[in-house]
Length: 74
Image 1: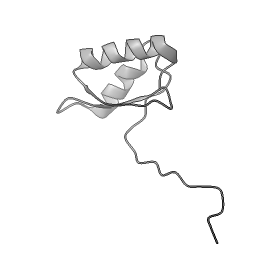
Image 2: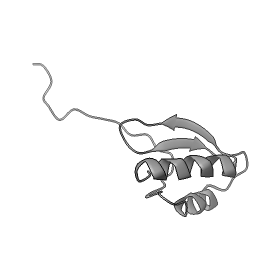
Image 3: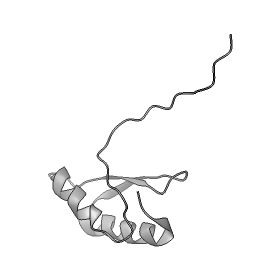
């Protein structure tokens, strides 16, 4: 997650510098998904990206499932 347009610009530069690949650029949240270079240590990468100006959080890959809170048709 990043903080606004300036945060995104800094993050995208950092992704390139790290040698990572941009996989998704989310439009409904200020966030991206990246793929780390082969052999990268995910813990070191997380620490490195957390230091990028404008980055507010770095999360490991996980699957989220959206569920409706409204009752379905009966």
